[in-house]
Image (cartoon, rainbow, N blue to C red):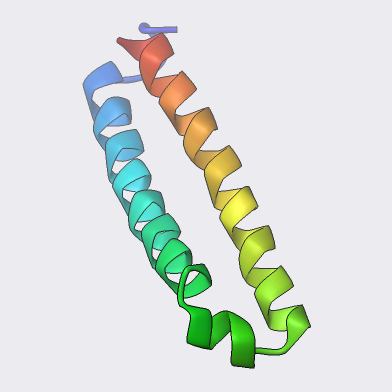
Length: 71
């Protein structure tokens, strides 16, 4: 696989995506831990945020695995 891609470039790209996802996850965590938000937001909005958090977490795990494989 190392012959097909530039490993350093790919690791750099994955690290940037990892940082982006970590920021998104942090923002959603703050929102969901805010009692005002969870008390006042419609249930559908809270559920959507939880769904996004789960999706981003899964993507982050995949990226971590890809980075691990390339190093």
